[in-house]
Length: 327
Image (cartoon, rainbow, N blue to C red; front, side):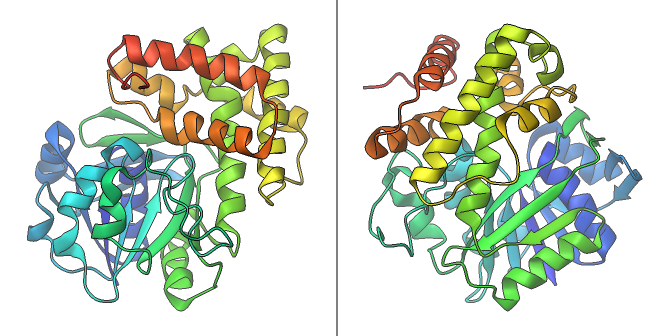
């Protein structure tokens, strides 16, 4: 099986090393010093179960990597227009493209009762829809507290690392199962689900209850949630996210807001949105915050805590030049 990881930064690098360990033929599209380090010295991943090392074929030009059985896109949502422009040479008639991203995805309403509803903030000009197509698309989310510590080196020491994949229409297809199995064979959780939208909301619960507050506090989840006032705000935000998910038919079950906050408060990790601000990278405001809150308003779900925290985060992102100002 030939698999290309498109965007081999922290998350993509960890996934690449797992796929290499599983024995598939893996390649990566990357850029900058991280790419050069992989080309010269391979990829090193410090993981909870040991150090992983591989030498994937790495390039910033997808045309040099050839047609793939599957492509796993792990870039920021903000980079998807560039992915759309470059992904063509990797795609054959049956190539699956798993978009493993944060937030509400551009395809959210496809193959549902609201098929035809578009989310233009998430796919400007329908660039990804045109380049990839809904037939090739698999949805995906990832849990992996990973960081590029220096070019060619990734740290992913959290014990709970997994990728959840699903078909847009909920079918448990052979291509879905094969890709999930390839990930699992490398020692990382590879989960195929018939409810990828439910998985999206479960991941968004963490993004939305922790991300804005950690960014405003400029500190890790562990340090931020140690403050009892902030912890109470995070629990209230979690309840709001769960209400939005339930309004769209995907209730988050099996955990209370208090349970989720208790787990997050033990993790000394700076959420990706805070890492983006620190590094001066474009921030995923629309997918993780703007669009979910738009959906909340459409469903009549009140979100006062999220409205305030997201408004402050958006102002900070715009002031830093990492997000465009709203029209």
